[in-house]
Length: 403
Image (tube, rainbow, N blue to C red):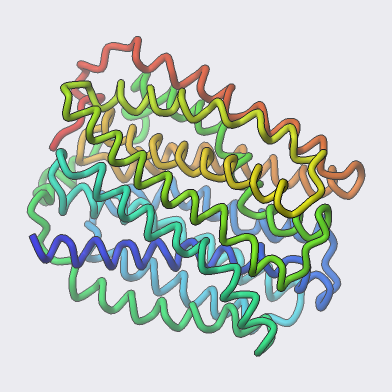
Protein backbone atom coordinates (compact mmCIF):
# COMPACT_ATOMS: atom_id res chain seq x y z
CA UNK A 1 0.00 0.00 0.00
CA UNK A 2 2.26 2.87 -1.21
CA UNK A 3 -0.39 5.45 -0.32
CA UNK A 4 -0.53 4.17 3.25
CA UNK A 5 3.23 4.56 3.65
CA UNK A 6 3.09 8.09 2.21
CA UNK A 7 0.39 8.97 4.74
CA UNK A 8 2.47 7.38 7.51
CA UNK A 9 5.46 9.50 6.49
CA UNK A 10 3.33 12.65 6.65
CA UNK A 11 1.91 11.55 10.01
CA UNK A 12 5.49 11.11 11.22
CA UNK A 13 6.32 14.61 9.96
CA UNK A 14 3.25 15.91 11.79
CA UNK A 15 4.40 14.23 14.99
CA UNK A 16 7.90 15.62 14.41
CA UNK A 17 6.56 19.18 14.34
CA UNK A 18 4.17 18.48 17.22
CA UNK A 19 7.17 17.51 19.34
CA UNK A 20 9.58 20.11 17.92
CA UNK A 21 7.19 23.04 18.39
CA UNK A 22 6.69 22.18 22.07
CA UNK A 23 10.38 21.39 22.67
CA UNK A 24 11.50 24.84 21.52
CA UNK A 25 9.84 26.48 24.50
CA UNK A 26 11.51 24.23 27.08
CA UNK A 27 14.96 24.48 25.46
CA UNK A 28 14.79 28.28 25.41
CA UNK A 29 13.37 28.57 28.92
CA UNK A 30 16.51 30.06 30.45
CA UNK A 31 17.24 32.29 27.42
CA UNK A 32 13.70 33.67 27.21
CA UNK A 33 13.51 34.07 30.99
CA UNK A 34 16.62 36.24 30.90
CA UNK A 35 15.40 38.36 27.98
CA UNK A 36 11.81 38.77 29.17
CA UNK A 37 12.34 38.62 32.95
CA UNK A 38 10.38 35.41 33.58
CA UNK A 39 10.56 33.57 36.91
CA UNK A 40 10.07 29.83 37.46
CA UNK A 41 6.54 30.64 38.58
CA UNK A 42 5.93 32.56 35.34
CA UNK A 43 7.25 29.58 33.42
CA UNK A 44 4.88 27.28 35.31
CA UNK A 45 1.98 29.55 34.32
CA UNK A 46 3.06 29.44 30.67
CA UNK A 47 3.28 25.65 30.81
CA UNK A 48 -0.22 25.58 32.30
CA UNK A 49 -1.46 28.06 29.66
CA UNK A 50 -0.69 25.38 27.09
CA UNK A 51 -1.66 22.34 29.11
CA UNK A 52 -5.11 23.48 30.28
CA UNK A 53 -6.64 24.06 26.82
CA UNK A 54 -4.59 21.12 25.50
CA UNK A 55 -6.10 18.87 28.16
CA UNK A 56 -9.67 20.15 27.88
CA UNK A 57 -9.37 20.09 24.11
CA UNK A 58 -8.77 16.34 24.22
CA UNK A 59 -12.32 15.87 25.51
CA UNK A 60 -13.71 17.33 22.29
CA UNK A 61 -10.98 16.83 19.68
CA UNK A 62 -11.06 13.03 19.77
CA UNK A 63 -14.82 13.03 19.30
CA UNK A 64 -14.55 15.54 16.45
CA UNK A 65 -12.01 13.27 14.72
CA UNK A 66 -14.21 10.18 15.22
CA UNK A 67 -17.21 11.98 13.77
CA UNK A 68 -15.72 13.97 10.90
CA UNK A 69 -12.68 11.88 9.99
CA UNK A 70 -9.01 12.78 9.72
CA UNK A 71 -9.24 14.17 6.18
CA UNK A 72 -11.44 17.03 7.38
CA UNK A 73 -9.73 17.67 10.70
CA UNK A 74 -6.04 16.78 10.92
CA UNK A 75 -4.71 19.36 8.47
CA UNK A 76 -6.69 22.12 10.18
CA UNK A 77 -5.25 21.17 13.56
CA UNK A 78 -1.74 21.32 12.06
CA UNK A 79 -2.40 24.78 10.58
CA UNK A 80 -3.59 26.05 13.97
CA UNK A 81 -0.54 24.57 15.69
CA UNK A 82 1.82 26.14 13.16
CA UNK A 83 0.26 29.62 13.33
CA UNK A 84 0.44 29.54 17.13
CA UNK A 85 4.12 28.60 16.99
CA UNK A 86 4.74 31.56 14.69
CA UNK A 87 2.90 33.77 17.20
CA UNK A 88 5.26 32.61 19.97
CA UNK A 89 8.19 33.81 17.90
CA UNK A 90 6.56 37.21 17.44
CA UNK A 91 5.63 37.66 21.13
CA UNK A 92 7.63 40.24 23.08
CA UNK A 93 6.22 39.92 26.61
CA UNK A 94 4.48 37.57 29.05
CA UNK A 95 0.90 38.38 27.88
CA UNK A 96 1.83 37.70 24.26
CA UNK A 97 3.44 34.39 25.17
CA UNK A 98 0.47 33.50 27.36
CA UNK A 99 -2.09 33.99 24.56
CA UNK A 100 0.04 32.13 22.01
CA UNK A 101 0.48 29.21 24.42
CA UNK A 102 -3.30 29.00 24.88
CA UNK A 103 -3.98 28.86 21.13
CA UNK A 104 -1.18 26.32 20.68
CA UNK A 105 -2.82 24.09 23.29
CA UNK A 106 -6.20 24.32 21.59
CA UNK A 107 -4.82 23.37 18.18
CA UNK A 108 -2.38 20.71 19.41
CA UNK A 109 -5.13 18.85 21.29
CA UNK A 110 -6.48 17.48 18.02
CA UNK A 111 -3.21 16.46 16.42
CA UNK A 112 -2.35 13.20 18.19
CA UNK A 113 -5.92 11.76 18.36
CA UNK A 114 -6.16 12.35 14.62
CA UNK A 115 -2.75 10.76 14.00
CA UNK A 116 -3.68 7.66 16.03
CA UNK A 117 -7.01 7.30 14.22
CA UNK A 118 -5.34 7.78 10.84
CA UNK A 119 -2.89 4.94 11.54
CA UNK A 120 -5.71 2.57 12.53
CA UNK A 121 -7.56 3.47 9.30
CA UNK A 122 -4.60 3.00 6.96
CA UNK A 123 -3.03 -0.17 8.45
CA UNK A 124 -4.51 -3.59 9.37
CA UNK A 125 -4.27 -4.79 12.97
CA UNK A 126 -1.32 -7.12 12.31
CA UNK A 127 0.78 -4.16 11.06
CA UNK A 128 -0.61 -1.50 13.33
CA UNK A 129 1.95 -1.74 16.13
CA UNK A 130 4.83 -1.43 13.68
CA UNK A 131 3.14 1.51 11.94
CA UNK A 132 2.52 3.34 15.22
CA UNK A 133 6.08 2.56 16.32
CA UNK A 134 7.48 4.07 13.09
CA UNK A 135 5.27 7.12 13.49
CA UNK A 136 6.39 7.45 17.10
CA UNK A 137 10.05 7.20 16.08
CA UNK A 138 9.61 10.01 13.54
CA UNK A 139 7.65 11.92 16.17
CA UNK A 140 10.58 11.63 18.59
CA UNK A 141 13.04 12.81 15.96
CA UNK A 142 11.58 16.24 16.71
CA UNK A 143 13.03 15.97 20.19
CA UNK A 144 16.35 14.68 18.82
CA UNK A 145 16.89 17.51 16.35
CA UNK A 146 15.35 20.25 18.47
CA UNK A 147 18.29 20.82 20.86
CA UNK A 148 21.04 21.33 18.23
CA UNK A 149 18.75 23.14 15.78
CA UNK A 150 17.13 25.40 18.35
CA UNK A 151 20.47 26.23 19.95
CA UNK A 152 22.09 26.88 16.58
CA UNK A 153 19.22 28.97 15.20
CA UNK A 154 18.94 30.97 18.43
CA UNK A 155 22.66 31.69 18.63
CA UNK A 156 22.77 32.75 14.97
CA UNK A 157 19.46 34.57 14.52
CA UNK A 158 17.90 35.03 17.96
CA UNK A 159 15.35 32.91 19.78
CA UNK A 160 12.26 34.14 17.83
CA UNK A 161 13.59 32.47 14.65
CA UNK A 162 13.50 29.09 16.42
CA UNK A 163 9.71 29.43 16.56
CA UNK A 164 9.15 31.03 13.17
CA UNK A 165 10.93 28.45 10.98
CA UNK A 166 9.14 25.29 12.21
CA UNK A 167 5.85 27.17 12.18
CA UNK A 168 6.26 27.94 8.50
CA UNK A 169 7.26 24.33 7.76
CA UNK A 170 4.08 23.14 9.47
CA UNK A 171 1.90 25.07 7.05
CA UNK A 172 3.41 23.11 4.16
CA UNK A 173 2.90 19.77 5.89
CA UNK A 174 -0.74 20.66 6.56
CA UNK A 175 -1.38 21.17 2.85
CA UNK A 176 0.36 17.87 1.99
CA UNK A 177 -1.83 16.05 4.52
CA UNK A 178 -4.97 17.53 3.02
CA UNK A 179 -3.99 16.16 -0.38
CA UNK A 180 -2.73 12.71 0.70
CA UNK A 181 -5.18 11.57 3.40
CA UNK A 182 -8.03 10.30 1.22
CA UNK A 183 -10.25 7.23 1.43
CA UNK A 184 -8.45 4.91 3.83
CA UNK A 185 -9.00 1.13 3.41
CA UNK A 186 -10.09 0.57 7.04
CA UNK A 187 -12.08 3.76 7.44
CA UNK A 188 -15.42 3.28 9.26
CA UNK A 189 -18.55 4.06 7.29
CA UNK A 190 -20.24 7.46 7.92
CA UNK A 191 -23.08 5.67 9.70
CA UNK A 192 -20.62 3.95 12.05
CA UNK A 193 -18.74 7.19 12.77
CA UNK A 194 -21.93 9.04 13.60
CA UNK A 195 -22.82 6.22 16.01
CA UNK A 196 -19.67 6.71 18.07
CA UNK A 197 -20.08 5.61 21.67
CA UNK A 198 -21.02 8.48 24.05
CA UNK A 199 -18.52 9.58 26.68
CA UNK A 200 -20.50 8.31 29.64
CA UNK A 201 -20.93 4.89 28.07
CA UNK A 202 -17.21 4.67 27.41
CA UNK A 203 -16.46 5.72 30.98
CA UNK A 204 -18.49 2.77 32.26
CA UNK A 205 -15.83 0.50 30.77
CA UNK A 206 -13.81 -0.91 33.67
CA UNK A 207 -10.63 -1.36 31.58
CA UNK A 208 -10.83 2.25 30.36
CA UNK A 209 -11.29 3.46 33.94
CA UNK A 210 -8.14 1.62 34.99
CA UNK A 211 -6.16 2.95 32.04
CA UNK A 212 -7.30 6.50 32.81
CA UNK A 213 -6.25 6.15 36.46
CA UNK A 214 -2.86 4.78 35.43
CA UNK A 215 -2.27 7.70 33.06
CA UNK A 216 -3.31 10.16 35.76
CA UNK A 217 -0.43 8.71 37.79
CA UNK A 218 2.19 8.50 35.03
CA UNK A 219 1.55 11.52 32.79
CA UNK A 220 2.52 14.27 35.30
CA UNK A 221 6.17 13.22 35.50
CA UNK A 222 6.43 12.78 31.72
CA UNK A 223 5.19 16.33 31.20
CA UNK A 224 7.51 17.59 33.94
CA UNK A 225 10.47 15.89 32.28
CA UNK A 226 9.44 17.26 28.91
CA UNK A 227 9.22 20.89 30.07
CA UNK A 228 11.83 21.05 32.83
CA UNK A 229 14.65 18.78 31.65
CA UNK A 230 16.59 21.46 29.78
CA UNK A 231 16.18 24.03 32.55
CA UNK A 232 17.30 21.42 35.11
CA UNK A 233 20.49 20.70 33.16
CA UNK A 234 21.24 24.42 32.89
CA UNK A 235 20.34 25.46 36.44
CA UNK A 236 21.45 22.36 38.38
CA UNK A 237 24.20 20.78 36.26
CA UNK A 238 25.55 24.03 34.77
CA UNK A 239 25.09 23.45 31.02
CA UNK A 240 25.01 26.44 28.68
CA UNK A 241 22.61 26.82 25.72
CA UNK A 242 25.37 25.55 23.43
CA UNK A 243 25.91 22.59 25.79
CA UNK A 244 22.21 21.76 25.52
CA UNK A 245 22.64 21.49 21.77
CA UNK A 246 25.49 19.02 22.31
CA UNK A 247 23.86 16.89 25.02
CA UNK A 248 20.08 16.92 25.03
CA UNK A 249 19.61 15.17 21.68
CA UNK A 250 20.83 11.98 23.36
CA UNK A 251 17.74 11.08 25.46
CA UNK A 252 15.27 11.26 22.55
CA UNK A 253 17.70 9.44 20.23
CA UNK A 254 17.99 6.52 22.61
CA UNK A 255 14.22 6.72 23.08
CA UNK A 256 13.65 6.34 19.32
CA UNK A 257 15.89 3.27 19.15
CA UNK A 258 14.21 1.80 22.22
CA UNK A 259 10.78 2.47 20.72
CA UNK A 260 11.66 0.69 17.47
CA UNK A 261 13.06 -2.29 19.37
CA UNK A 262 10.01 -2.34 21.63
CA UNK A 263 7.63 -2.28 18.67
CA UNK A 264 9.46 -5.13 16.97
CA UNK A 265 9.53 -7.14 20.18
CA UNK A 266 5.83 -6.46 20.71
CA UNK A 267 4.96 -7.75 17.22
CA UNK A 268 7.14 -10.85 17.63
CA UNK A 269 5.48 -11.71 20.95
CA UNK A 270 2.04 -11.29 19.41
CA UNK A 271 3.19 -13.42 16.46
CA UNK A 272 3.82 -16.32 18.85
CA UNK A 273 0.14 -16.31 19.77
CA UNK A 274 0.13 -14.05 22.82
CA UNK A 275 -2.76 -11.61 23.20
CA UNK A 276 -1.87 -7.98 22.32
CA UNK A 277 -3.06 -6.60 25.67
CA UNK A 278 -1.16 -9.18 27.72
CA UNK A 279 1.97 -8.52 25.65
CA UNK A 280 1.85 -4.78 26.19
CA UNK A 281 1.29 -5.20 29.92
CA UNK A 282 4.34 -7.46 30.19
CA UNK A 283 6.47 -4.88 28.44
CA UNK A 284 5.11 -2.08 30.63
CA UNK A 285 6.09 -4.02 33.74
CA UNK A 286 9.59 -4.65 32.41
CA UNK A 287 10.36 -1.01 31.60
CA UNK A 288 8.92 0.37 34.86
CA UNK A 289 11.97 -0.96 36.76
CA UNK A 290 13.88 2.05 35.35
CA UNK A 291 11.74 4.59 37.25
CA UNK A 292 13.73 4.56 40.55
CA UNK A 293 16.78 5.93 38.69
CA UNK A 294 15.08 9.31 39.03
CA UNK A 295 16.00 9.27 42.73
CA UNK A 296 19.68 9.50 41.77
CA UNK A 297 19.35 12.68 39.70
CA UNK A 298 19.74 15.20 42.58
CA UNK A 299 23.04 13.55 43.50
CA UNK A 300 24.52 13.58 39.99
CA UNK A 301 26.39 16.72 38.94
CA UNK A 302 28.47 15.81 35.90
CA UNK A 303 26.92 16.15 32.43
CA UNK A 304 27.72 12.52 31.52
CA UNK A 305 26.12 11.02 34.63
CA UNK A 306 23.11 13.35 34.59
CA UNK A 307 22.35 12.90 30.90
CA UNK A 308 22.84 9.12 31.17
CA UNK A 309 20.30 8.81 33.96
CA UNK A 310 17.89 11.20 32.25
CA UNK A 311 18.22 9.19 29.03
CA UNK A 312 17.03 5.97 30.66
CA UNK A 313 14.18 7.67 32.51
CA UNK A 314 13.16 9.60 29.37
CA UNK A 315 13.05 6.38 27.30
CA UNK A 316 10.96 4.68 29.98
CA UNK A 317 8.43 7.53 30.10
CA UNK A 318 8.13 7.67 26.32
CA UNK A 319 7.67 3.90 26.04
CA UNK A 320 4.96 4.08 28.69
CA UNK A 321 3.10 6.65 26.64
CA UNK A 322 3.41 4.59 23.45
CA UNK A 323 2.25 1.32 25.01
CA UNK A 324 -0.67 2.83 26.89
CA UNK A 325 -1.82 4.57 23.70
CA UNK A 326 -1.75 1.18 22.00
CA UNK A 327 -3.81 -0.29 24.83
CA UNK A 328 -6.55 2.18 23.90
CA UNK A 329 -6.84 0.41 20.53
CA UNK A 330 -6.91 -2.97 22.31
CA UNK A 331 -9.80 -2.24 24.63
CA UNK A 332 -11.94 0.18 22.59
CA UNK A 333 -14.03 -0.31 19.42
CA UNK A 334 -12.56 1.30 16.28
CA UNK A 335 -15.38 3.84 16.00
CA UNK A 336 -14.48 5.27 19.41
CA UNK A 337 -10.66 5.15 19.45
CA UNK A 338 -10.29 8.92 19.03
CA UNK A 339 -12.83 9.70 21.75
CA UNK A 340 -11.31 7.19 24.18
CA UNK A 341 -7.80 8.46 23.44
CA UNK A 342 -9.02 11.98 24.16
CA UNK A 343 -10.53 10.94 27.49
CA UNK A 344 -7.39 9.13 28.59
CA UNK A 345 -5.13 12.03 27.56
CA UNK A 346 -7.40 14.66 29.09
CA UNK A 347 -7.51 12.96 32.48
CA UNK A 348 -3.73 12.47 32.45
CA UNK A 349 -3.37 16.10 31.45
CA UNK A 350 -5.41 17.36 34.39
CA UNK A 351 -3.05 15.83 36.96
CA UNK A 352 -0.10 16.99 34.86
CA UNK A 353 -1.32 20.59 35.03
CA UNK A 354 -1.51 20.45 38.81
CA UNK A 355 1.90 18.80 39.12
CA UNK A 356 3.60 21.32 36.84
CA UNK A 357 1.88 24.32 38.46
CA UNK A 358 3.13 23.17 41.85
CA UNK A 359 6.60 22.32 40.53
CA UNK A 360 7.65 25.91 39.78
CA UNK A 361 7.02 27.29 43.30
CA UNK A 362 8.50 24.11 44.86
CA UNK A 363 11.68 24.45 42.81
CA UNK A 364 11.92 28.16 43.65
CA UNK A 365 11.53 27.38 47.35
CA UNK A 366 13.30 24.03 47.84
CA UNK A 367 15.12 23.07 44.64
CA UNK A 368 14.54 20.06 42.39
CA UNK A 369 14.96 17.20 44.88
CA UNK A 370 11.40 17.08 46.23
CA UNK A 371 9.83 17.15 42.76
CA UNK A 372 12.16 14.45 41.41
CA UNK A 373 11.52 12.22 44.42
CA UNK A 374 7.77 12.41 43.85
CA UNK A 375 8.28 11.81 40.14
CA UNK A 376 10.20 8.61 40.78
CA UNK A 377 7.11 7.05 42.40
CA UNK A 378 4.58 7.90 39.70
CA UNK A 379 5.19 5.22 37.09
CA UNK A 380 5.45 2.37 39.63
CA UNK A 381 2.10 3.52 41.08
CA UNK A 382 0.64 3.61 37.57
CA UNK A 383 1.89 0.08 36.93
CA UNK A 384 0.13 -1.20 40.05
CA UNK A 385 -3.11 0.13 38.55
CA UNK A 386 -2.74 -0.88 34.92
CA UNK A 387 -1.47 -4.41 35.61
CA UNK A 388 -4.95 -5.31 36.84
CA UNK A 389 -6.24 -5.06 33.27
CA UNK A 390 -5.02 -8.60 32.63
CA UNK A 391 -7.46 -9.87 35.26
CA UNK A 392 -10.51 -8.21 33.71
CA UNK A 393 -12.92 -9.82 31.33
CA UNK A 394 -12.52 -7.90 28.06
CA UNK A 395 -15.30 -9.72 26.26
CA UNK A 396 -17.72 -6.80 26.50
CA UNK A 397 -18.64 -5.22 23.14
CA UNK A 398 -17.35 -1.82 24.20
CA UNK A 399 -14.01 -3.30 25.30
CA UNK A 400 -13.18 -5.40 22.26
CA UNK A 401 -11.24 -3.76 19.44
CA UNK A 402 -12.86 -3.71 16.07
CA UNK A 403 -10.56 -4.06 13.07
